[in-house]
Image (cartoon, rainbow over all chains, first blue to last red; front, side, top):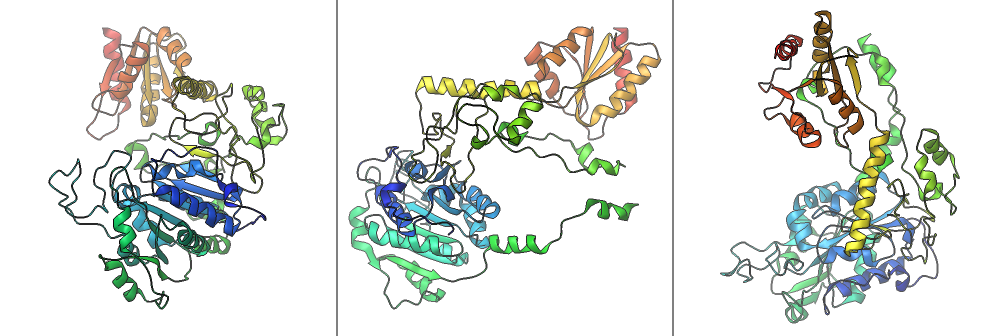
Length: 281
Length: 259
C-alpha cells in the first residue's frame, strides 16, 4: 500500500482488451471483484503489478490497466516474490489457476508461503484444466471422470486451504466468483494484509466442469463468531467437505521477509572488497 | 548485456575454471560499470537525445537508438489504457521500457506473441514483424559485443579455435609451435551466440586447417562451426575430466602440419 489517488471507479482499472474466457466463466466474477477491490483501495495503476502464469485465468493481467506480467506456466510466484523483494513500494498481486499454483508451480507456493512476503495470491480454482480442454487438476475430486481419467481419478483431492494453513500462511481466505461483492471485500482485505495473503476463489468452468449448482448449494459463509487467530478451528473449517466455507479462515500479523530483508540491508555496512582482501596480503 | 539488450544472458563456464585456485590481480575486483536499460523517458517524442543515459548510448557507438520512432501514444498511468508501446518496433530492435512507479505508463509483459502494445496478437503479419525485430536485436548485439582475440603468427597456416579454460594451454602450444617454425595462430571465442561471423570467417579463410580442441565428448563447438560455416575442423575431444596440457595441443598441431 503506497500512493493513493482519488475519484477512481472499478472501470478505471479495466483495460480495453476483451477477455478470452467462455461465456459464463467464473473468472469474469473474479475480474469484476478485483476491479472493485482495487478501486475501493484506490490503488495507483502505475504502482500495482499483477503477475500471472499460464492458463485461462492467467490471462487476467491483460484485462487490467495496472502493470502486468504474464509469465511462464507455474512461475507467477517467483516473479512476484522477486518483484516485491526488490521493490517493496509496489503492490504485488499474483493470480492464476489451480493447475498453475497447485501442480506446475506447487513447489514455489510452499516456499513463497513460508517466506511471508507481502504479496496477495488469488487462485481461481475450477477443479479442472480448462485451457487444455478438461483434464483433471490437483483439486479435481477423487473418482472424477474426464478425457484424461476415463475410469475416474485415482488420486486424492488437494486441499488448498488446509495446505495454506499448514504452510503458516498469515492470511487464508476462500471466496466464490458468483458472489463478487463478498469476494471484492476479501481481495481488499488480502491486499491490505501485511504478509502473504492466500485467497482461494471457487470459479467454475461451465465448459468443462460446471460446478455452479453444486457450489451454490455448498457455499456457507464462515460464522461471524469464528476466531481468526485460532488455527485449529480454521483447520476444522478447511477439512469440511460437504460445505464450502467462505470468508477469512485465519489471519495473523508477523514480520514479512521483504521488511526483514530491507532492515538487514539498512543495518549492514557496505562490503569493502579492499579491506576483505587484506587477509590475503 | 542483459540490461542493454533486455534478454537473458547465459554465462558459459567449465569445471576447470570454477574448481581451481589461482592468483589474480586484486585490481581485477573493480566494480563493473552497470548499464541501465533504455527507458521510455530517455527518448522524447521527437526521438532525440534528452538525457545522460541516451547520450551515453550514442557516445559508445550505439547510434541506431537515435533513430527510434516516437513511442508514446499516451503517457501517464492514471486513466491511461495500456497505450504505451513497450514492444515498439525500433530500428535497433531494442524497445524503451517503463519501470513501475509514479507516472510511469503501465503495460503487460507477456510470453504470448503480442503487438507493440503488449496485447496478445497471433496474426501472421504481427508474428513476422516481431520475429524480425527480435533477430534485428541479435544483429545489433553481434555488432557491439566484444570480438574474439587472434593470437600467434599473422601468416599462420594452421589455426586453433576454442573457448573457455583451454585458452592458456592453447596459447602456450601456439608459442611453442611458432618457435619450432610452424606457422600457427589461435582464435579464442568469448561469445557463442550471436557468433561473431566476420571474425570467425576471416580467421578460417586465413588458414589452411583448423583444429578445435574442446573438453566434451561430441565436439560441440566443432559441430556449431560446421553447421554455421561448413568448417571441417580437426577435432580433439577430451572428456576424462582432466584439462588439456599445452603438450597435447602441440602434438595435434604437429600432426596436422605433417598431413
